[in-house]
Length: 301
Image (cartoon, rainbow, N blue to C red; front, side, top):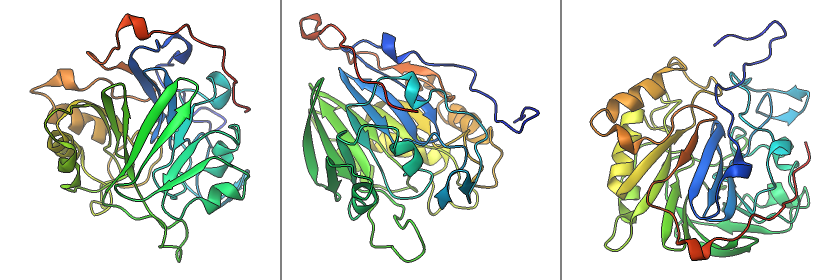
């Protein structure tokens, strides 16, 4: 990865255009690390929003933590404010206060057990804490969105001693479609619980980086594919790579290993690099459900 003369990380090769995403499909893009912006059949969802140059304790510009290797594909000013924000756990590279403060305080936020205090102190007032197996149905501008917290293999402490905090993946359901955001996880058989008759997981957003030497906390690309298979997922989009140097493997290795793991069925991989736009085939709703796009509030930057 090459930085410019000012030490600024380069922009992704692709830039998504969320204003063009239809409300009758599942379309989105990984904006960097675990930050995914998605139009889920008319409901705009944002996962683990992190747009800061560095992540860690402190407040900009005095932040102690790793620096981005790649700029965000979009910043909050570049897209309409989300209808819902999902936070998987309280680690700084997933739960970034500076980034969250860019969004309206009445935005519905779904977060893990015992993490709501980190939001309420910044006056977020529509906070839903979920533990594994618990669900909430959000009423949004685009319609209802059901969110269920899923078991993952990770940990939730923000600092050294607050290990009481939870850590989640999430299942999103709407109009018969289902998307799984795995958050941060090591290999676990827990995702096999999602596979059941009459339900198909249309898309899994799976972490694939930071496994060397942290394999007990972060899955390898091959393990990510295995967990998606356990869940019966039709398609896969990787997250948690290309953005922060958190481990020993080369920055380009996770994506290369993921492509190799899916070499026999490459059509299941909808996007790989930060900024690429994905659209889930076969997840469209009937045209009678379409609604004209509405002008939405844009977040501050």
